Structure formats: structure tokens, C-alpha cells
Length: 87
Image (cartoon, rainbow, N blue to C red; front, top):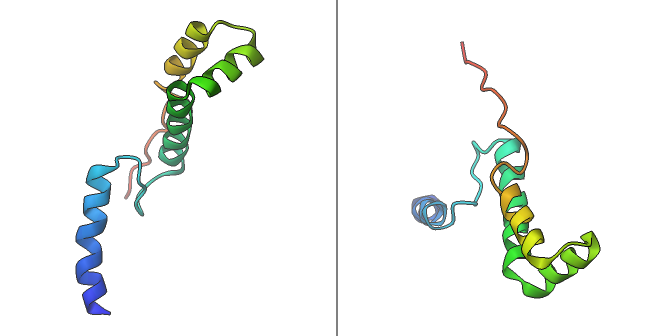
């Protein structure tokens, strides 16, 4: 079991360094939701068929839909909540 702990931690650190969206025990609900929304928006922009589907459903051009989705990636869940100070 100690070998798993020894080898598991560097692998986990490597994953966090490589994939910024991977969560860790200190991830807040807001950070998690923000990552999910940004991943979804990136998938919509990257996939031409999905972008076309969304643009037809919204009744907009593809360029306008792409702009709107990219703009939403800035703060997809609104501003982050204020941090409470630990006493």
C-alpha cells in the first residue's frame, strides 16, 4: 500500500500540471462548474456540426454563435464568490 501512495502522488501532480481542468480536494464548487462550462463551450466551438446545430437552434449565423459562446467562456458561472477568512 505504501508503494501506491509513493507512486500515486507524483502521477497525480503530473496530471494536474498537464490538464488544468482536473480537480483536486481543494476545488470549490464554483471552480468545478466553471471548468465544466468552459469545456462544453470549447467542444461546441471546436465541433463544426455542433456549432451549426446550435446556430440553427438559436436562429443566428455560425459566426455570431461562435462569438457568443467564446464570450461566455470568460465568466461562464458569474464572478467567483468571495473567500471567507479563516480564523
